[in-house]
Length: 255
Image (cartoon, rainbow, N blue to C red; front, side):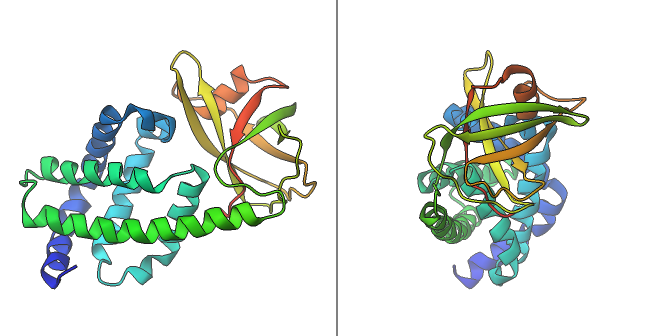
């Protein structure tokens, strides 16, 4: 990036502080309308509650603020890349996100798409995307190299469901009956379920409350939520899934 482009990105910080959530909400709406296949990737319950637009707005603002010193965002990059890997985000999806984000900046801020500001944000996004893609590939390789490890999604079968005061405790094992990596307390997996009547799949992360050291099974608590959308994975698990049903699961990652 040129010094002029860096200054242009930094000039948007006040606007991002005030209208960041408006921008990211517009972005998600635009992107999911243009690419409905991504509704199988992004958690739509988090879209409905506004949780995801708020998280992205904070990340975009932080990147603009630290555009000259991205090393200060190391913890944020670690967190973001772990989430992306748990959802099996792939490099080609970054192009879709970038295109819709740039158009959203142009349309929400009422700036011509051919302007220097949009070009500056394009270069900033490409720089960030390269960093994230590189880190994520390392993580995929590390996960696949573990004993019993894998990258992306792997089918698991529900072995048992135990009723508990806060919800239900699900115990699952790999459908291929092969070994799985041990996991530490505080690590998490993503679980992807099918949404009845919607024809899409939805992912959500679940944290392990204890060490998972059998190399054969994982167990996690699914808590009931008093208020939820039709896309809420926890509610779908609690009401529609039974012993013997299969789920798509990502490999454990640090929280």
